[in-house]
Image (cartoon, rainbow, N blue to C red):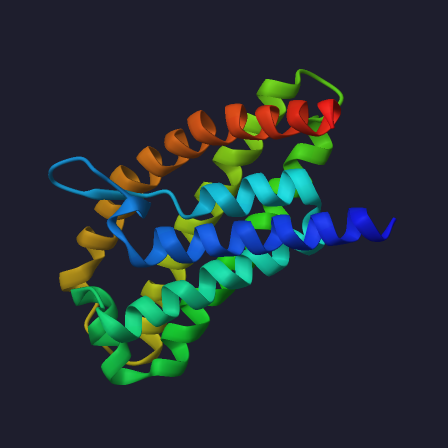
Length: 191
């Protein structure tokens, strides 16, 4: 039992390290020329489906804190405008959606689990990724309004990002999470 707990802790630490690595290096981005697609949701979703929603919340928090640290160090144009108005709102925008990712992915997977495994993992990955996109950009827009920042100039940019990057990230999550999770489960069975 102690050995299993230690193994889970080590695996959780590896997932957190992977999130930090992807968050602070170009490895976490898939460049599509006109836009970068982030894959930071992938270790959160895989870790959640492999280790449970409680560990998933830790991974989501790691994702959120990494995102907030990145916003402090090199904010995008959209984030820097909001950062000037309220760093606290940027922290909320960075962390809250990332805590919802494991909860959504786990709930969807639990609902579909009895059916085809590949489909359940893929749909859970898509839903987790879209949760991140919708809530992150939705909170950004809401906080722009609450801070009295003109949203007319950024509305199309936020909408375009949601549509293009959000769709690509959801597809990438489904394509990456499914084989990774199934491979981890096979590995666990052999040990």
